Image 1 (cartoon, rainbow over the protein chains, first blue to last red):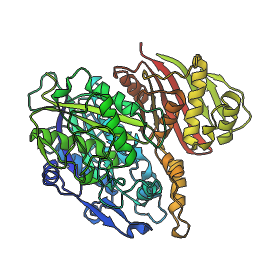
Image 2: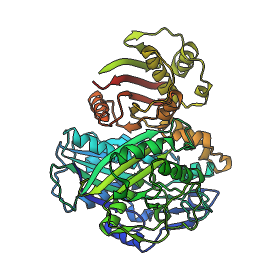
Image 3: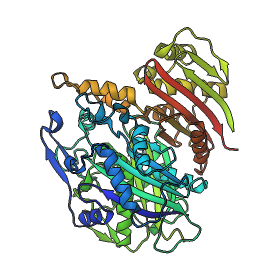
Image 4: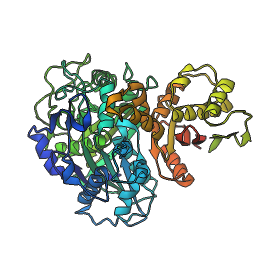
Length: 372
Length: 184
């Protein structure tokens, strides 16, 4: 079984998983309105890190927060990261893309290449293997975990360190603005008045290993799948095709009543949330509680799949279904069991769901103590 | 395990190792290949060079496989690796926002700033509901790529993969080295 050994989240809400979970549980959000930032003509709402706090002459902010996140996750483990049996997988959509700006001259331009960025990280830890970057749009964080599961199953590595990261810039914000995808206010996932998404900075790390025997308190990555809508490169399927198919594989033969909740992508764009409601219904999971964490962090892109998996594990540990911050009135055509209040659960499994540009969708089933 | 393979560089095209005749080079080569071997998919002209390259390479690969019925299927994955991610599209998009006096970001330019779009283009063309993935390593490494593609057969539905290397840094520098693989 593929077991979670340790994890960390670095975000504007905290620098450890515990700090982040406590903040989210109490309803805190780092979403703020920014006007005139980075010379952008339009204001935007985002969850941003204090750039000065991560200033480092040798590393960009993306590299710095990944290094900090991995270091923190490794703290109470005895993993020898210099071993050939340890693999680094970095999940990111845009990495150091800000280096393309002509006014940026603090770092070599070659660091804009994702593989070169990843090498700064593996080099920092003295790891001898070529790091692999998963860059599969907004589903990267779940794809990276599925890759980790496969590498561990194949026996090639003893530990896989999965770290997701994206840091916002004029490049990313202006692109989403050109798509008219950003909400002028704090986002409202699945709500009737949702107006779009917010973007956010974060790094999040999960370390996985393979074990034959697990205790009832260990978190197991059971099954995951990636499926395409085969419909459109920048809009989701109207019938939730890829998301439905990914969900079906992740669920497998597990009875749906064993699932505490589905942690949806829930970006609060009109199309995404509607599509997810269709996919969840088609998978026969309409009665399972659903939540979205975008109201706390915005969409953290390459970090989202890792960050949201970690918070969901902690929520189950605390018998909690985290509230969907920003949600008020259901605004999708298919029924979902969703709430803006924390709720209790005694169940021990959840599904993490994501969708992204390129028509890609991913689902991951996590279960505490494994599937009995 | 490898059933067919296609190689495309700015000056050379090999289909299962056999050179394919052409007159053009660089990105004009991709247009020539489209006109001579495909011709019925005008969306091609909207794509960025990375997507054109991956699309043409996949078409040549699927033409040798034959029996192209375009029936929806979930058992075929599209999994690519490269070095430069979406660098050409990124550089182009940056040029649209670099100057505040000439600020004109467009969704059509922004969408190609994701390297996995090429896998989506191939899935749409062929109605593949299967896995699509994109990964980046800083140097071509056949061992890493082959091991990763073998691992992808751990998916319970995947039976075949269009996979390999599809890299493009600009219209004169690109390389596709892709395979049609089956699980055996």
